[in-house]
Length: 373
Ligand code: MG
Image 1: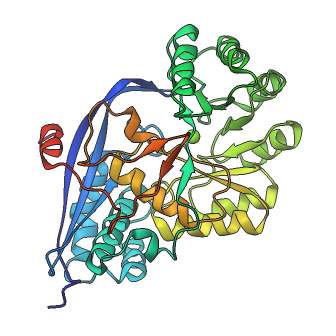
Image 2 (image 1 turned 120 degrees about the vertical axis):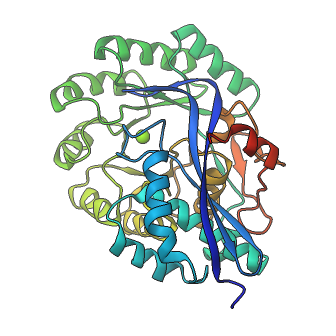
């Protein structure tokens, strides 16, 4: 049997507590569930991937529980006995067995890359064509506490030189209150840090037409996914109307989605998540389409733990087209460190790990402490 042959593909669900509650438009979480996918080769190498969605199935229909079932019942039988260097063929075979389920497929894709790179003794970014940069800027997502606490959190991040740009989630409150809250934070940070907002597709067209111009006039520098995923023409209307960039997130979950956003000039920036795009190759296709059309790309997060974040850092650092920074802050929101050596955040950016595979090592005690079952 060849040493790259996949001998086992198993999963583990972790629940990792956060430093503070993290609020989205329709839910709030105090712990982030993670699905760890473990690939073991005949050569004795283990690779990890992470299946993670932001706090539950509200974003895209997948959760750690659905991902576990898809991976164990349907994807693992396809992979067993094949080799970790057959990734394009395996991903194609996965498409034949399971439609959609991109977060689950991405977790397996990353585990295969990690195991293959470790088997060769090279970093994952080498498999992806080589590093273009050695780190990437990180925007921080502020919480949903009262305004003075949010400003204090931003001031702390600025003072410790951790982040120079901030994102606020919107869509959970009445729009008038939501806009007043965001403008108060933007005003407090004016001239010192950029503020952007993510509405997570919660506003309808008329709400967006009424309130987005006020956010732009108040100094908000970028508006992420204000309106529903499938309404590309509404996103295009808003993008043509507003003096600040629109970023598409929910609207772009595949290369074809990216093509549609390009056709309608519906956004200036595309949020690329290796998770939602279904792995590294499809993410690369999204970036290629954006780049050919002159659109920027942002390395976005679904609040990944250290494995998923490391995978996204490797990806982002190999792509010149990811020219709009990142929000790869996931591990900083976790109250507990899962790695033996944490990812390195400093000077407003996160460094590209350099060791074999993803370049990070899980601490088995920490993993055991947060394993659900
Ligand atoms: Mg988003």
